[in-house]
Image (cartoon, rainbow, N blue to C red; front, top):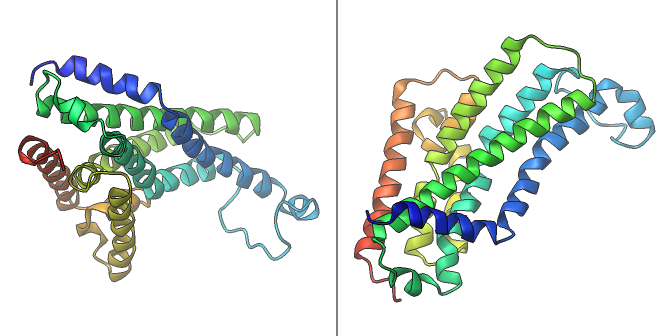
Length: 257
């Protein structure tokens, strides 16, 4: 586990010098901006129809233009869409080494392979958490700019807890995607795995077994579904399995092919 701190610093430098942080920030910013658009529409639906913001046939069922509705939109988006953006981050952090053909140079450094893997996981977690914080700040700014009615601190506190837990659950589930990026040497295979997981989550939810499928748990949590301890244990075990698989792959697999 030598030079872990240095490896983390190097991974942060790689991310900072790329355009991925900007692209992912723009992707996350669409959530509060999209929610703000719906708040404008909900404030005056008839005006929105007259100026062409929405179709005359549009059916608005989100609720009213207030903080509760806006924050509920945010939490639902984070729970359902977080795995996509966090998964893209994990795909890039691990997959770029193979796509850019830098993995051999990386392994030639006097740094333990386990330290390389853990440093990448730290960067993914911090990057994802930072984007979540940025999204929350934009949400507060947009809501204030729109003049949404005042709400009790309890509403913000509860929404903050929900988002924090959902983000933690979602970040935990990117380790299998990191393994896919490592095992299949690139960006596209892990993206395929991620899409497969999301598709299966929809099917399993429809069948009523979502609480036992790890990629269904974050979305069910933000929806207010009652989840037993087994759901969280499944997420934790999935995360550990993905991390262990990635560590073993980097330690034992032939990285030259």
